[in-house]
Amino acid sequence: MSKNIQATPVASISEAARAFVAKPRKMLIDGDWVDAISGKTLSTFDPSNGDAITTVPAAAGADIDAAVRAARRAFQSAEWRNLRPVDRELLLLRLADEIEARGDEFSELECLDNGKSLVLARRVDLKNTVEFLRYIAGWATKIEGSTIDVSLPRPRDGTYFAYTRKEPIGVVGAIIPWNFPLMMAAWKIGPALATGCTIVLKPAEETPLTALLLGELIEKVGYPRGVVNIVTGTGIDAGAPLAAHPGIDKIAFTGSTEVGKLVGKAAMDNMTRASLELGGKSPVIVLEDADPHAVISGAASAIFFNQGQACTAGSRLYVHKRLFDQVIGGIADKAAKMKLGSGLDPATQIAPLISERQRDRVWSYIEAGKAQGARAVAGAARPDNSGYFVEPTVFVDADQKMRIVQEEIFGPVLVAIPFEDVNEVTEMANDSPYGLGASIWSHDLSKIHRLIPRIRAGTVWVNCHNMIDPALPFGGFKQSGIGREMGRAVIDMYTENKSVCMAI
Ligand code: NDP
Image (cartoon, protein in one colour):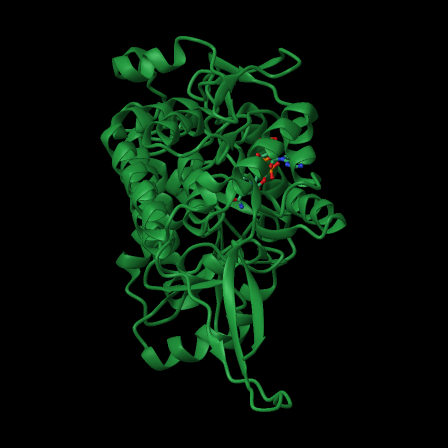
């Protein structure tokens, strides 16, 4: 039996957000708001009902080329290069203030374009964006090299003075996905601007709106022309030429592992530096002594947060046999009670997925799970609605080889497997091509500390999941990517090391 879905009219968004989508949008190249050279456009859709919202330019190779040239000119301009670190810090702080002041508009546009809950857009996307920009602003004044005592043969009556400088890497190409559009834009633009780089950003074709509003504020706070360029278009027509452009010095990509590999290979042809934040299939490991009530709510939110459209979604749940029935019963019960609806409805707990394509993709995994013998104890029914909804679904009777255990689904689909001992669960948790995140649920400090180093993942949470902080490096082991975002680590991703050796 599928759930009843309430439709909330779009009229409940503010005048400002409505005005933003009331006309076709343009993209930002070299300080000008322009159409694509071809004149072609793309529509963006409201996932709660499939209606078109507005159009954006459909950029292609020539537009990308213009944006990269603008970013190069800006990178070399005295106006940008001579800005003091403290001025770069101040610009980013002002940008954060402006975004915060327009927070309602950003959250509403995100909700409209991505489909996500407005509450989540405010509490997670907007809040993280503002806090991240404030955090990374501080790094602009804290970029340091070191002095090094070298052992070279000394010149007569002389010696050497050697040191390293960290210099901006140059022109950055950034390609981002649709699951946290504003936040992902900030995660790329923030470190680029803090370190003195310039950037060409391509948002996902499904969610270009908040990046374009961000572009308006970037202009408003006074960034020189060409420092930030925002190009809209498809992955094939705009993303691929950006990744392969010989005029960029670094590509920063977030998205699927499949496309990440293409981007990485294209970058390598030009020896372009690349950081890749890719897919995940994060295990949630519940040891025998865990508090089942905390696990039920923690594991449910680990997977159902943002409709499961998070690279760190806790999509594989491994529960000790003693707790398995209680925990799965509790999560299934929660899933069955979750309210599906438009993101604009404050009571909504499961909003639509991003697109028809993504809904069908997730649905094909649900079918594959059933066909391979897994049993759904919640969800797995198709909602009868024009929006892109998928019911929160929980599978049991699964084994490690099934597609629903091995592949990234990127939807509200959980698969649960029981275990008996820690070695067995460690092996299952690591039996994945991915290694982005993992969580351990227990109060046994000794077991937890012994398990953490054995988990092959970029982040391990304990008694929590999906906790992302601007100061904590974030990124993947294995096929979950290369490089780290946030923290001190991200500064290394946007700078080159220069060694200087002077005979004095
Ligand atoms: P993609 O990896 O295709 O998209 C991410 C970004 O890459 C988008 O801006 C996209 O543009 C762009 N892109 C697509 N093809 C190319 C290309 N050949 N060269 C350069 N850039 C390109 O993710 P999808 O949106 O297709 O989602 C598919 C699956 O990927 C999801 O089901 C999920 O499993 C995974 N995914 C993982 C994410 C993560 O954070 N780990 C985020 C998003 C998706 P455009 O949108 O215009 O195609």
